[in-house]
Image 1 (cartoon, rainbow, N blue to C red):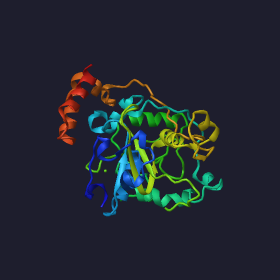
Image 2: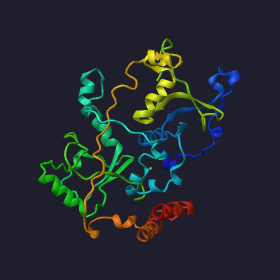
Image 3: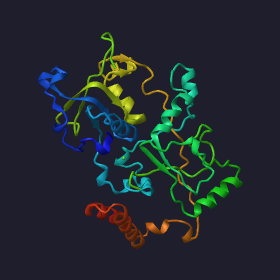
Image 4: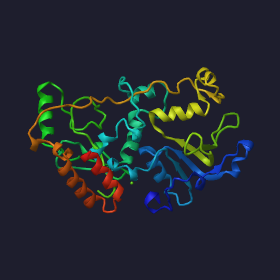
Amino acid sequence: MGITLSKNSIGSDPSLVGTRSDPKDSYRAPSQWKTYDYVIVGGGTAGCVLASRLSENPNATVLLVEAGQSHKRTFFTKFPMGFAKLLKTKADWEYYSVYLEEPDFNSWAANGAEGWSYDELHPYFMKSEGYAASASKPDVKLKDHGFNGPWKTSEPDVASLYHVVMEACAVLGIPWSPDLNTPNGTLGASSFTAFIDTKGRHGTAISRPRAIGVEFSQARNSPRYRAHARKEIIICTGAFNTPQVLLLSGIGPAADLEEKGIEVIKDLPAVRQNLFDHQSCGALCVRTKAAGSWDYLAKPLPGVFALLSLCTLLYPNATIDMLFNAIIYFVG
């Protein structure tokens, strides 16, 4: 049924989705906890898509646990140009990483990760994407994209300055790549692909440890709650928090866990090792005529009117506090 047709609810009260953990009875049987077929930890791109896919089974129950406040109260999550205002803030936990060499799917397979070669993963990439083709990018090969998946992507509008920058890259010898989301790699200069809104959503051997539930709370000193998973617990909390969750659960390098006083459930030396991140060149500062960019939107009066127009057009139900916060940002 998916997220659009399933009976679903979003809440911030952990008592509605979990059973309070009593320190005096830490070994209460999981069957006494609130139980779901699947518990997903992490509500990012992967977590939300998995929750939607799994809930296509009308008989399945899915709990999706995500940290932080609701995106509905963070104005700059509402439109693509706002993402830069979220970097190194509470919205992204102020995380950063150091760039290393780009990973290669086939090298994973060659080193023993069966099923992880590019050819084997490609059908899933195609299945997950819902690409909206654009006449502005006629050189994009449609065979490299999927069209019916839940990850909605498109080619965004760009300021006229973009074309000048691309010409400068060509002069400097930086190769032009019409589409970075292909097996040809990500080296070169190109426009980015934007995510768009839908309107514009095993059995385990007894001798091996098995994850049976999750524990969560609203704050460090708040009451803790537990939820049990009949079938699977799926962790997709990103490159930083996935290893953190595993380590806190006793899964990782034994020496590191013992040093921190964490009971070792499974000695896995590879946890939190070999992080690969995509490279970002940061901001490129240039001077241009006013008509060549969208910088005028950062000025108080034009910015306010542009934001009001945007909210009226795309988000007719935007709350007053969202509008107020956006206006304060641009004016202040």
